[in-house]
Length: 86
Image (tube, rainbow, N blue to C red; front, side, top):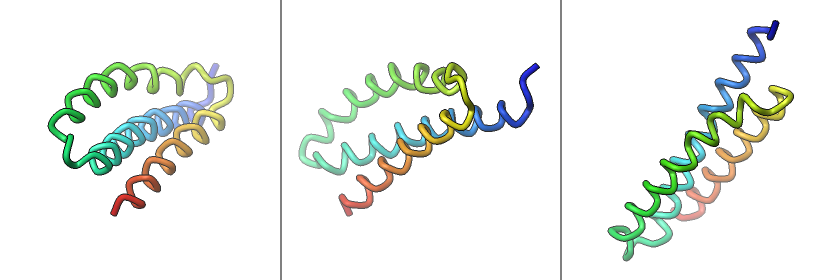
């Protein structure tokens, strides 16, 4: 039986992957402000395709710590890219 802490880490990782998609999308839109009308629909399609894979990935990883580090790293890097745009 899987420990509840493992599920907590995996759920947190899935939320961090979702946050990373939001942050990376915001950074892409901020990077191309003149093309935002063309970039936003393309990003929505890409994020819709990647979101289920990213959230399921958190439960496929063998160790919950790896899932948490991966999701946290993606969210942190997306946040840093977005912060550099400002």
